[in-house]
Image (cartoon, rainbow, N blue to C red):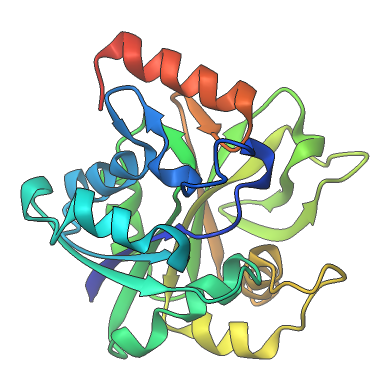
Length: 242
């Protein structure tokens, strides 16, 4: 199956206000380049060259000015506008019409920055006949994240921000799906905050026994707060990355 990359880079970036008053958070500098470049290069280095970036109209022109067609980065980029911030799953649904039935997706949240190569995870997903695959990371406070209940090589349920976590792992913003994901998105209901939640999508795969996982070894952060943004800039800057 053909593999396409998707980077979800919309949202309001409210936790980074006022930095995000004029600029989408994924364009903020981390190391030597805007945050968004990290995801583009990770997908490229995993052999994925056709990448859709889902973004808000607020900074669409700035993305196009900086990244262009993607030729400078060795990829082909297309830009898809998410009119309203209505959840990660809703943002992902915007990509469906640009894909064919025999494709698979590697989806990154644009503010997830990490050390590991995606290549071994992508290779395992290519061998997976159907369903979904997510990447986990062991963290010190899993109560802040979606926490998986593991059974062998699959996840049987993900609990969002549990008071009493079932494990020390969290689900990172790295997801891999077959085209079934779009049917599932159409079937789930908005959460109490009025959004289509990606955890509900992942749980639908889990409850069908079709959610596999890998565990990340290296450094990872969700650079959506001032503290984590500073950490990411420090780590990547010291390594000379980006």
